[in-house]
Length: 409
Ligand code: TMP
Ligand code: ZN
Image 1: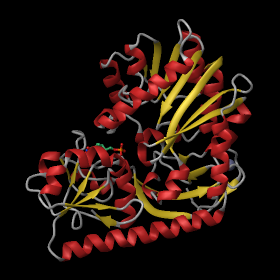
Image 2 (image 1 turned 120 degrees about the vertical axis):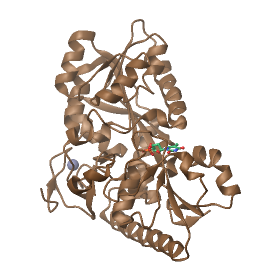
Image 3 (image 1 turned 90 degrees about the horizontal axis):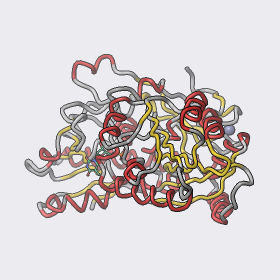
Image 4 (image 1 turned 90 degrees about the vertical axis):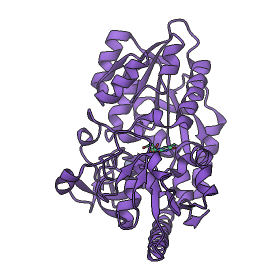
């Protein structure tokens, strides 16, 4: 496949990438040493579709390479996200699931951290999840699941077996699905006449403001804006009725859609669209400036880490996030720069980071003994992490942060 010209996945218009990150492995494909030689790589480049405003990566790996029965990402590893999902579920249930026998469907339920809140409340529910191993964890938490990708066919099957959905919810997953028009058609198929589709995802406005380029990786085929979401769902008779900014994942947006004319539209939609215009999210110049900031950020991060290493300092990484795969590979950082990355996910421990081959160790290794410096790859979980790692700072350890700019703290 080539990056030179590509068709927008949302509207079909031709688009040209404004930024290239080079060869990238699959962000969550942590490897063992014997797999180094046959790692899968693709070219990561980002583009904005001028006519519809959809921000997207140009080339992407086959989803079957990413969401399979050894998918390494479990939502429950973050206490902050578990708490956030409880609040999100309450928000949806309160507004949209009051009627008797209401039915809620989650697209991409992962280990059930969001939908279990509906399940324990006794609501009729179904979690749709393509990765069998994470779906099995959801089952153990009392969640009814169907192992499948969400597309029009799955939507028809669910509607036939369970009836129309009063709410379809999703979190950090709609942007993973390359066939976004298939999602829109599936939603239009499954939704009850007054039903809603609520989903939240990393927000383009936040990514541009913070130059947090690490949001760009294989799973994030899209980084959504309100303008692009409204445009891609409209041909399927769905209308954006609410936008609610969220602090999660370094700045997200919750979008709510319903059938056109079935709901009143919150004033927040016009406010968000106007703000996107003020921020220049539709302008090519905005993305040229974004690229320059990313390049500067990369050079400063590499410079700082290599200076510290020359001084004989130990530098480790904290949290082997999906996002860190973009940072490590774009910056060309390896095990000589970063000794290891501490991570709480047992499936990642003992393996190596994709492409950059830095060992992943348990949080116990982080303290044994503490290094001088730790790169905060899980910057979106900063409050949670700094809260529990006070002993690192007390031992004289310093955090290396790189969003929105490189600095020590
Ligand atoms: P995410 O930023 O893509 O949600 O990835 C979270 C990763 O960070 C996951 O592998 C678990 C890891 N992590 C830690 O190792 N320690 C922590 O305190 C938190 C919050 C996450
Ligand atoms: Zn487009």
